[in-house]
Image (tube, rainbow, N blue to C red):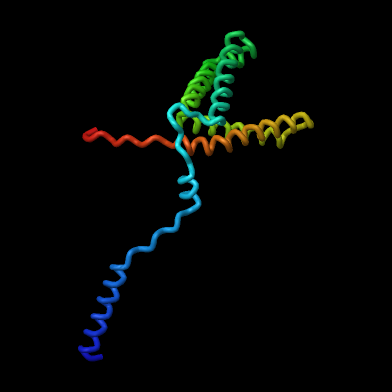
Amino acid sequence: MSGRERAKRRRKRRVGAAAVQEAPPPEPKPSKDDIAREHLVPLQEGERPLAVTIGAVIAFGLGVSTLVLFAAGVGGDSTRSPATVVYAALMLVMGYGMWRARYWAVLGFQALLALLILVWSLFLVRAESLLGVLVAIAVIGLAGTLFWFLVKALARIQMPERRRPRAGG
């Protein structure tokens, strides 16, 4: 190959590379997730979705009833432990957080609902009577439904912005 042909090929490569670099990149096609996020409307100040309100009432109810039963001494020595008070306090704090539509509270409540669904699914496998099956299915169905509605509510609450780390710290 002569020097003239090599130079011609080099020029073609440079022109081709420049043309590729100058072409604007194609617009990315929005995904289903991006479209769903665009349709979400963030909560207004003081707004609380119905599912979050229901979760808050349930958490408050569990916390208050646990404290009342603890104070009354119901359940014997097995329920008279500091863990019972910690559970009641956790439920009350979580109920307050959900009442204020806080992300962390709804996320924590969803984690507890997931554990509840898992435990009752295991009870369903071991059910020995029709009543046991019906109760397990009812608990799983109600907890699963509340969990499902809390997912969209959690997306509307949106996680707060992270604070930047302080310089020198």
